[in-house]
Image (tube, rainbow, N blue to C red):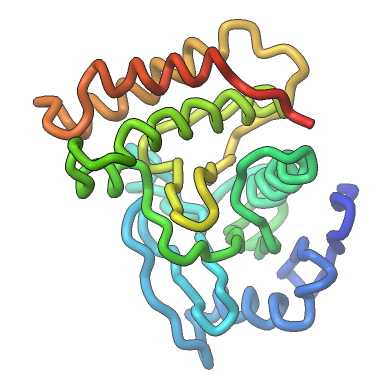
Length: 244
């Protein structure tokens, strides 16, 4: 594969890495350690997702292993098949979107260890955003009466619009894949299976509906997010912004 601008492909036996050149000196050893159960590194677990993600505070980086969900997780858990590894695809999409000015988390690198031909395990390394919470963590902790409540919904709507205009099609836009940070604003994560496209058709409506369903699933009684709250988000989306 052709690495994105600023990234290099490094091969170490069965371990193949796609890493940003300016952090290669410390990221390559760190990703080797992820394969070896973090020998020599102090890490903390990151709550949420499918488990296994670790924060390496010394380098301000989050390393997420690829793990399956649903029924396949019982049989395969962290094993994937194919010649075009998902960690590398996710890195390429995320790096391309960030280059276009989309509000996505900064990606540092990805690693794949080949168990045998067309069978691999993988990891993705991204910047750790200080003080960030997922949208769901924020909305479930923040009282609806606080002054910033409506503004955060509007900011998320504008950020989703910008994401779309920068060419993203997020297949899993939910309340746990959106970060809210006092310093960094709204950022999107988890672009596994995402793709870039010039024309998204009815993607805006479907993505907004998916996010609303995820909030209803997490907050069935509407204690933290009301229909009126979400209408603020929708309205801000359609007001929108233009990707530079």
